Length: 395
Image (cartoon, rainbow, N blue to C red; front, side, top):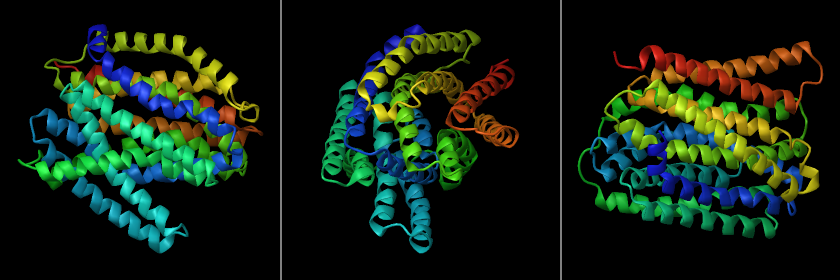
């Protein structure tokens, strides 16, 4: 396992450095944005997250499988974009009819969800083709544009909405250019017709909704539901967002290992899983204290209420990385139904545990929800490992 990680260390480093720039800007924003503005930003991110997830419909994962099997990248990319466009159009029309949100924001979210899918496909292509130079250029261009735009909009008084708009500009620009290139270079027939792509997407959708959106946003929903206010939501969002830099590192390692998982000719061994678990825990013990110290010294004092949760979030991200590693292997073995079942079960456990605690105990707040968040990732990994051990290994 260490050999495979050394082989992709450049991709891991580039991914972490580029995406980490956005988190390094959080201390700057805490000094020019009020907690309430951060709360508004968190709401917009939460809404966009579920829209993007539904629009993508797992076509980013299907692209990896199609391209790994030798399909033309243009065809594989555009086939997924067509499905995403149809789903996004339905969602956008419904929002225009029934939501009291500005038309510009609704259309901006729709366009961003499509272009971000193309962007992700290009990133995956550069990894699969082992083109570190292209990978670096794509990531750097997107993050530089997003950083400049976010700072500009916030400084000129657009607050949380301005930061949200700016955060997506880099991905949109790169995705738009890539979409034009894909259209011009489109050749060959993408793997899987509409029915195959739909079945693949719908099967993994519960997994992505539960593990990819609801788990990370349940605490935000809880804060809104119990009426703790935008300020608390903003402070929580800053703590979680800064800690998320650690998740970027772990996801960078997992994403860089996707070609290794999908292209390997034999089953994943228990030793491979144990090795990656050990690596993940080692990264946690080394990295979490650094993230916490940076948070303590860099972020404005009014945002330090939940600083101890940095360790809880980092540990959760470490365990999730191992779970995602196993989940990718199970998906490559067409066991994605079990992946969805595992993620759904663990998130239901998360929500029920918070709900039951709120009924039994008074004063359940952000800390208790964070501990339940960590527990759900432990359960997620345990379920995935059981499925891998009994169904994911060849006889």
